Length: 187
Ligand SMILES: [Fe+2]
Image 1: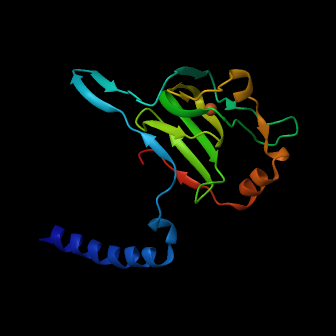
Image 2: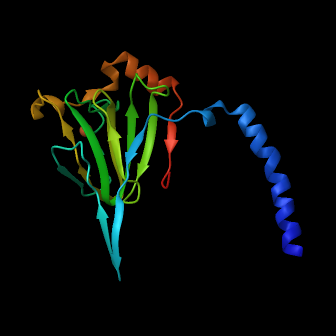
């Protein structure tokens, strides 16, 4: 009986919070533009999990290993953030070991600036072409498989040239003035 009363009290205190959040937080109404390709667990035996990580769109796979708390691409010589941006590739970045934080900027998105925390449970983070992106590993590094989709015209030499935020005024402005949408683990 006491438990029930406690539970009711919790419900009563929760309700107004929810209402006021809906009223004052327009963010909660909109979907973000960041998407994930989830895996599917198709078999489990003792201490063994089988994941189906198929990405139908993918026509290339890259394995990217950070052996420590690497930042990729690293800051430029004066400390400004650098990013990769692909013209002919969508990334599908799936952490298979460790943790990785991605920073994404896409001028075409409703909210252009996102910070996404990834681990093995997150699924593959989809980074469409023309999205500025950089990533940083946790202290013990991380392993990512990028089940990429490459388009005709893809040239590895052209697709991995770091771009400094100091050289792209629009990018710099977003980093400076936009509040990032944070995606924490488990979302
Ligand atoms: Fe990339």
